Length: 256
Length: 242
Image 1 (tube, rainbow over the protein chains, first blue to last red):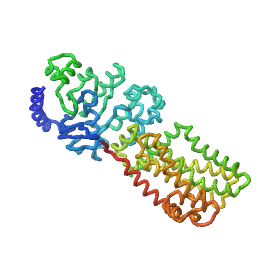
Image 2 (tube, chains in turn brown, green):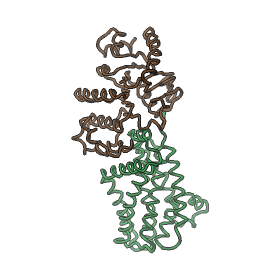
Image 3 (cartoon, chains in turn red, purple):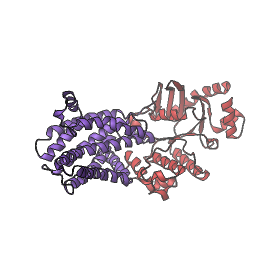
Image 4 (cartoon, each protein chain N blue to C red):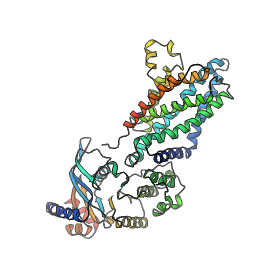
């Protein structure tokens, strides 16, 4: 593991120097530390996310995925370190319309209908002519337009939350476990949507437990207890572990 | 302040109320029911009914809005929607004004119906104007909103939020002059009551009822409380947390 770790660290600076010239970093985290109730969640954590890419944060629960995401959107109280998002300090007013965040538990109004939720979040982003139908179609909820979010199933609610994150055309989308509880067909459609999003030069940071989805990401970061175990493209991680199956790759890298 | 975003928030809160007709009905029916009971309890003493019913018109809006605001803000906190709002372009000020406009409208509706019912079928005598009563009621409602917003940050669950009602509102109710005139209380209690917003709400309502005295001073004092409490409430809407 140490060997791979060093290898990774040696590669990173070259990578980011190249990125600086070609593409600016969408997210740049240096020395991030978060201590919650005396427990260290993250310690001097560094991460660069290239613009226009899908970065997958993988790791067992409690590995710090959500804390990293909350730090990037400026919700987390930081003990130390610095985060630049689209070249601006995280949480800055200038990022409000440019970054969108969808939490693990659907953060929507359960006592509003699907289209009312979409229209409200669109209005907050300054879009007065919301295309709520169009967005609901993307997540296959156009039939549930007038249904109260409280009466939706878990999967439908997750899709609605995802749809509200897409309104307002953000440049950086941060999605915490967006595909949990969705059927394979819908998952495939959503990943197509994610790729379309990054094809426009936008950036996606996504966390997942599902290793089969890891293949859809351009770059993966494997976390455990707030530290990066390994990073690279899915192919590179396979090579590191010497295994084909992504689940097995994950297990072997975590257990090393 | 961005007007469009503020209106969007107010509209959203009103839509939430609209989808919950039972709560809306309770907001209006409960005060009417209580007024009716009061009427029968003091059937043979109309002047006592006159006193209580009049003062209660100033108490209901604050009570109800305190409750629904503390529960609504707590829900925003626990459901994660508040965080989404705090990282969106909406400012805290717009968020609070959005709530104030929506609940102001709901409390105006409550005040119109309850006061009309009290004046009509129950025979409450109002020498001042009914619109004056409604105006004071809306101010009281906003006071309740400001207190509820502030207090909800100290509650972790809806159950706890409701427990704040007896702590925050009952002492104010006891000292407001509803049960005994404020100048007949032991001096210290009278002095304390001077620092409680509900006292001025009850004073203003009584003045409108008997059509004597100016309510300007009371309204100004309530407005000061309102600005102070809303300021305190907005301090509790913090973006970052541990």
